[in-house]
Image (tube, rainbow over all chains, first blue to last red; front, side, top):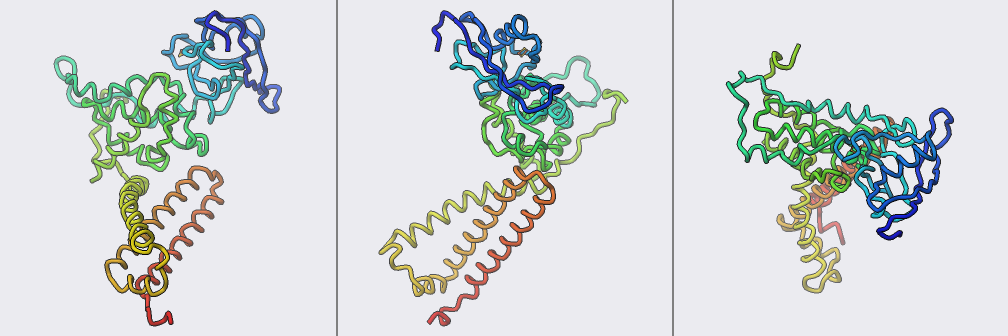
Length: 238
Length: 132
Ligand code: FES
């Protein structure tokens, strides 16, 4: 492993070209890097200077937009948050698993967002509007604070073996976003969300593997949120 | 129809359904089984002369008592259903083809039912006189 001074990184990218067809194949690149360079910087270096055909998504470059989740050295992460110097080489980069690959590191996110939409990820409250804002105590706000941090990068959902195997499971991210509103004291549609998640492909599909918690680049306690949703469904039934 | 004007009242309670209750059953039966199975091992296999004294007469003696009948039957029933539900979940997770999944689950249910009935029959209708 190179020292903190930076050096040259060997990066193996799992590439897939839909026009050429065939199976995905590994391609190796060598890129110089600075001590503070991230995997995203290496991918930029490849795309801008060595091989313009490499396809990947990124937008903010600072861990907020959630577009560059990928499998880096076998672990789901945001390429913009992982420093090259912290990784053992050669660094492997693959598209996130369980979603159809469009090209190289770009996957079809539609199944992921379908599940997300199903849990009504927005505040629902048709009570007459108060004069000022709908007030909430700091304690009530803290109840769902953890799950407000989600950036919908799909690192959790695509690290879940139940999601890989079955392809129908709503997945951790959808449940996290349901949690964010289910435990919001101002919301009025929590039963609808919980009904969606009591379904066969809902929260009870979770086997507490904890891959999602490990994968989350925002350090959300994903598995705990899922368990809280399960016990909330139980509580409202008994 | 905009969200602001949309009629929406809180629906009563989430449906719950099979997945909720099987999930809850797994938690409860798991805890109960820990005590039943560890108790069974301690009493039958460790205490006294241990497993060496277990023979037909020993079993016959135990099953003449309603306590051990109930203990063993509860252990059998909970263990079987707990295990069968675990397998159901594995099949749901990893078998993608509908036909195959239905076939495997049917086989699982039939086998579990047969084992449950056989076990129940042996515990309930056990007749020590037939042994000799
Ligand atoms: S580029 Fe926006 S999260 Fe990484």
